[in-house]
Image (tube, rainbow, N blue to C red; front, top):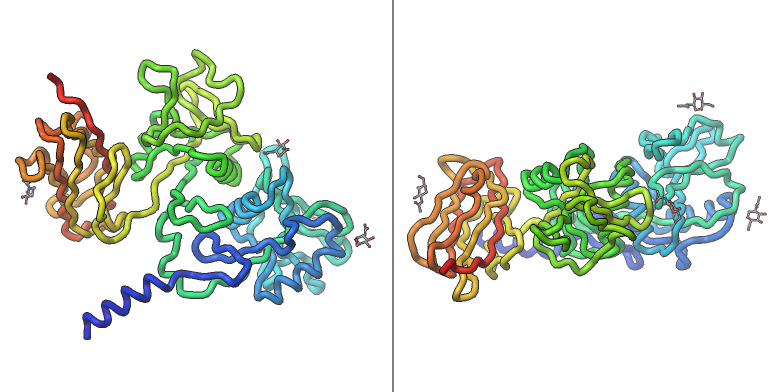
Amino acid sequence: MLRLLAIYFAVTTLIDAKTCPTGYSLVGGDRCIRPLDNGLYVQGNLSSLLPGMMSQCEKEGGFLPIVRNAQDNTMFNNFAAGVVKKDFIFIVLGMVCNTKTKRLEWEDGTKIAYIQPPQPQFNPVNLTFDCVEYSQHVVSRVNTSDWLLVPDLNTYSYTFLCETKATGTGTADLDEQCGEFDKMTTNVVDLNKPCIKVYTESVGWREAELKCTQDFAMLASILSDGENSYIRRSAVGMGMVGGIHIGLKASEGSPDFAWVDGEKMNYDNFGVPFPVAGGGECAAMITDRPEGYWMNVDCDAESLPYVCRRPVFPSTTCPTKPPKANEQFFAPGFPHPDIPCEYMLTVEAESLVELEVLALEANVGSDYLEVFEGASGVPLANLTGTTPAPPDNIIRTVSANVMRLNWKPNGAVGVRGFMLSYQPVTKSP
Ligand SMILES: *[C@@H]1O[C@H](CO)[C@@H](O)[C@H](O)[C@H]1NC(C)=O
Ligand SMILES: *[C@@H]1O[C@H](CO)[C@@H](O)[C@H](O)[C@H]1NC(C)=O
Ligand SMILES: *[C@@H]1O[C@H](CO)[C@@H](O)[C@H](O)[C@H]1NC(C)=O
Ligand SMILES: *[C@@H]1O[C@H](CO)[C@@H](O)[C@H](O)[C@H]1NC(C)=O
């Protein structure tokens, strides 16, 4: 009976992902959003447009965007930016005038408790006005990540989004794949999109790199325009308009820039004339312009907020394929890595395997990462506790082109296990 139950649960968790009604996109794992107008934006005034759009959305069981925090705001902005190709996007928020209190409130009858912070030089929108006498509504401006009060009679281009409920219990929730990081989603669900997190403290580039690693991530690589915009909007949404460090650095003794996480440099968004010679060996994104151009900066002198990136959490089973060289891999079940697994890291015949322990968090006395020479050779290291300090964080095979890893957690209670990466190195003659 127990076994049957176990199978039953395994099957239901697989199929019970959240789903959306037709026409809606699943965003952030559990929210369903669609643009109400096929043209994606409509020209007109709110006194004529708003009632029709609201009742259409309510008919579909939803509301126009209700924004309760900065994350909600970023989520709607990112969704709109993904579907509406336009410089200025005004999303009409789901606010209505309560004729008794004469104040705006959310369409679902709740109080407006959160107000999106404005750009530094401006004041936040002030909602303490008589909405019966002055008919105005709030629009969210995507490219500046702020809000604007608009009189109902003013004519603009407006975007109307409708959010409705997802069905299913959502055990395959995308949120679970990124933990406290944000899943990089646009208008479609893409399971392979990475997780990112913007840190608001300003530090030098090297310290930013270290802090990302301590958080089991890497200073972010950026692989497309879509990713660049997503990261820029996330930063601007948190008020980071003065630039952010990204995971790009000039290679040792070369003017060529390379991603610190080993990704190939197929996408380049340096703004002309950058990188400038002598301008610095690290890169930052300029966040106060929609293009999100990059510039090179002095690695240590330039103190900026930064953005970290990591892949979605690995599954809770041991991987069926060995990890690839130069790619970070994590303890299975991360961030609750209590599953023992064995890995064979193999490089071409004439090379050695060099393992880098990027981050380690294991309970001393119970969780171990054993490292062996070859498939069945002698132990090279037996790691536990926290990340070994250099040079002990680099472990190399002596003569074999195979390294065996054995992760032996005993509960791994309250620790995140490991983030590792390996690469081939040539045998010294
Ligand atoms: C908002 O407007 C009201 C009415 O004009 C005013 O009394 C109040 O001080 C304003 N609040 C802020 C924070 O400016
Ligand atoms: C608002 O839009 C409606 C419909 O397009 C139009 O009839 C009305 O004159 C507009 N009002 C203003 C003040 O522009
Ligand atoms: C918003 O877009 C306009 C036009 O592309 C641009 O001039 C402005 O700098 C942008 N603002 C931000 C904060 O991106
Ligand atoms: C690693 O250390 C643990 C605890 O001392 C021990 O049980 C285990 O056998 C060691 N592994 C190897 C390969 O030496």
